[in-house]
Length: 282
Ligand SMILES: Cc1cc2nc3c(=O)[nH]c(=O)nc-3n(C[C@H](O)[C@H](O)[C@H](O)COP(=O)(O)OP(=O)(O)OC[C@H]3O[C@@H](n4cnc5c(N)ncnc54)[C@H](O)[C@@H]3O)c2cc1C
Ligand code: FES
Image 1 (cartoon, rainbow, N blue to C red):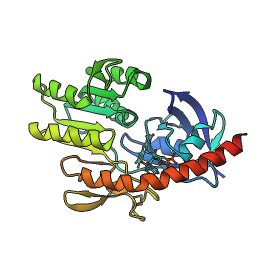
Image 2: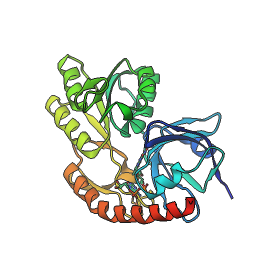
Image 3: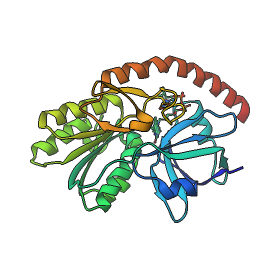
Image 4: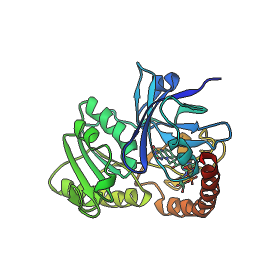
């Protein structure tokens, strides 16, 4: 059976980890914006994670994940040289970058891992990239050097002002727009509320805004309906129609309230799995 070796594991902060996975078939085709679905072991749940990078020659795919619940706890317990059961992809549509000359890329928290490959691709294509990355505080800042390397301008924001500039990414974005920067597009990836408020600003200035939607996904192939969203008044499936969508068309309030329905259920699953996990590692 095909297994997927963890070639590298690197903690980026206390709860976010980077892994390079040997998955040559996925590495061959992956593009920014796409995702994979993995299973840690045979009994494991399938979880979607974005392709945070790839090395086609070495056959490696980078994932960056936040430890939030049962499966990401299990994944984070794996070490270099160990194997994952399944690693399916690339799934979803690639981020469209063609023809863009000047773009603001806005990343919030672990959303920066999803935004980075888009910023890198735009930069490689000669586009002027202004990156705004935001975090709650200094100790959880990730990928700053990587963003610096592919950005013509960068603003690092923290909510509490412990690093970079104090304030939300929306403040930095509006300042850049008011300073006269004319963007062809804004790409915003992060918490739903962040993306909603970015869109409220860009609507005022009529700047096309692309957001990446990460609702609950089960099969990732358009069959289960778990990832449905309302976009432009129509039902869309994030896994096959997205994950990128026109931010002005997304019904964020519905997505936020749907997300909340799962929270309670998942917290229970997490507690159960954590207890199991604790027993396993004893
Ligand atoms: C297309 C896509 C790309 C993603 N990319 C990344 C990424 O690059 N890095 C990252 O840290 N996270 C990413 N996520 C979120 C990631 O899938 C969840 O954090 C993960 O599934 C949590 O599983 P868990 O068992 O550890 O936690 P759980 O306790 O099961 O859930 C914790 C939270 O994770 C989310 N979640 C749970 N199950 C799913 C699921 N099947 N599909 C989607 N979200 C779920 C929910 O918001 C939930 O509240 C992505 C999600 C999607 C849909
Ligand atoms: S995950 Fe099942 S339809 Fe999208």
